[in-house]
Image (tube, rainbow over all chains, first blue to last red; front, side):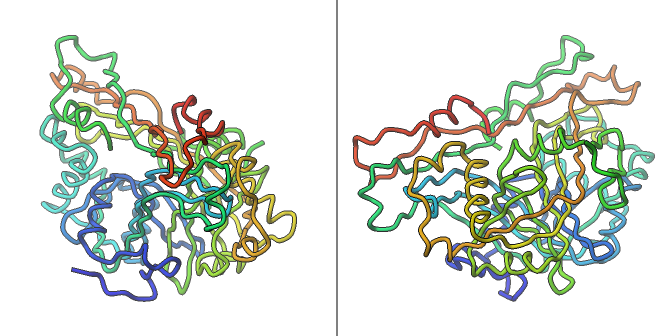
Length: 218
Length: 218
C-alpha cells in the first residue's frame, strides 16, 4: 500500500526515482540498522546517527534514559529518519553526469516513549535488526538496565524512497569520447570476528555471527 | 585547533567519546563522501543524503539548480551535516552492553551559493572527494551544465566528532558467562568495475579506478 504523496514526502528532483509503496520503502529500511535522525531544538536542526528496528508501521529507537536527544524526541516533535545504502559510483564520460547508485528511505513521524512489554519488545526488535538471533544468545536486560534505557516508537506517518540503479547516462555526443565509463560497485562487508581477549578458549563463534558471515553482506 | 564547545556541538552522552579538534573531525569527513544534511522547512526537519567535498573550513554541496533542497539551504538557514562510518558490531555478553564501533562527525553551519571560479572549484572538490583524479579524466562541464547546477559552500561554524573503538565492555560478573563476545568488523569495499556496455573495447579502466581498487576500502 502506498503512502499518500504530499509536499513533505514527494520526490521533486527526478521524480521517476521516487517510490511511495511500503514494500520498497520497508525493504530499504530492513536492509539497514543505522539511520540518521533529524529533529529541531531551539530552531537548530540536529542530525544524529542511531540504531533502529522496524516492526510493521513503526520504528523503534533506544538510548540512555539520560540522553538529551531521546528526551527531545519523546516530546512529540516532528522528526525525520533517513536510511541510505550506497551501491556504487556511477562514472560517466562527462563530469556533469557523474552520479551514485543508491537506495534511500526518508521517514516522517513523531516519537512516543514506550514502557512495559512494548519497551522490551522494542529492544528485541532493534537487536534483531542489527543481528538476527543475537538476543536469544545473551543475558537479557535486568530491571536496572531497563530503567537506564529509553525506548521510543516512531509511528511512520509518511515516507518515500529514492533509488538510482544502472549505468551512467551520458550526452549522445559523448559516447564517442575515448573515456572509460561504468559503475564501481560498493558493498558493506563483514570481516573475521575479533573475539574478546577475555573470552575463555572453549567458547565458539555463535550461530548469529556465523549466519552473518555466510550472508556476506550487510 | 579545537572548535569551541557549546550547547550545540557538545557530546553529552559518554563525553569521553567526544572530540572537538579539527584533525579528528576533518579526518572523519575526509574518509567519506556522503553526508546526511538536515534542515528545517515549515517547522518540519528534513534529512537528505547528498555528496560533499571538504576544503579547509568549508564543505561544498551541489545539485540541480531546480532542487528544492538547495534553494532552501541557500537561504542562509542553519543546517547540520553528519557523516558516519560504521566500523563494527560490538557484541557483548549482555543485551544491554551491545554497541557499535563508529566514527561520526556532526557539522553546524550555514550555506551560501557560490558562482564563477569558486563554483567550478567546488565541483572539483566534490569530485575529488568521491574519486580522486577522476576530474582530469573526463569532459569538463560546459556553460549550460554549470547553469543547471547549484553549488553551495557551508562554512563550518561548529563541529564535533564521536568515536567508539575497541572490544565490548561487560559487567564484571558477566565475564564468566559461557557467551561469545567480540567485535565483527564492517567495511565498505569496492567490487569489480562494471564497464558501460556502450564502451568501445579498447578503453581501459582508468587510473582513478585502479587506485581505488588498490586502496581496497572506501
